[in-house]
Image (tube, rainbow, N blue to C red):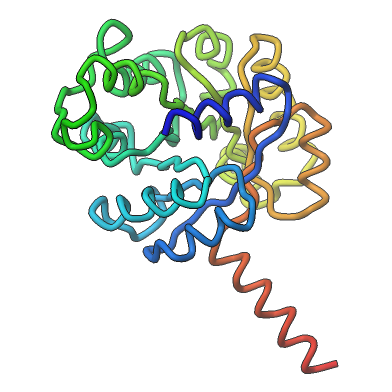
Length: 255
């Protein structure tokens, strides 16, 4: 666990980019395969994905076996959702729809143990090796897990100056699709108005030494946003990647 998280942090601290997909699968074989393919991380999706917390723990195991950092996008910012994701061993949480500093501070409190937060304590969980890990070492390691906050709308844009002052944020993730909808341009992630606001958020975060992430679904956008300063690149979704690969095979047969 420690080596995987330390390696990830070393990359982004060094200014390198990292890349990984959102994953909606309930089959740990696909998560493991993504790790063997070379992805730095996987975002195991409990916001829009159908996977239960019981099933998700096997996806976390699969990611770690294959060397991909397991990050769980929680369905909401509740204490239960955050705590359970971390208890099953996620090395990072990605929290949707954060719009102000108060919400950001609440996430940190729920995700960190004392003195950084107020996370509920239970050592009989996978993250603590079911109590086999020495308790103080567990608390120390647990407070190193990544906190990724998603900024996805006009309210977050308006409150960005207060959000970036909240201590404990590792990555700010700009959600282009929800942002486009908030701007009255649903799905138009390449619209100049959407791109302008995304770049505004990227610049604000980087000026305050916070790593920035975003979602892309084309190779061209990978390079575009890397050049703009984005380091945490979420490339597409497992099911979409599979559909596209299948289409390419079908096209071969039709030509």
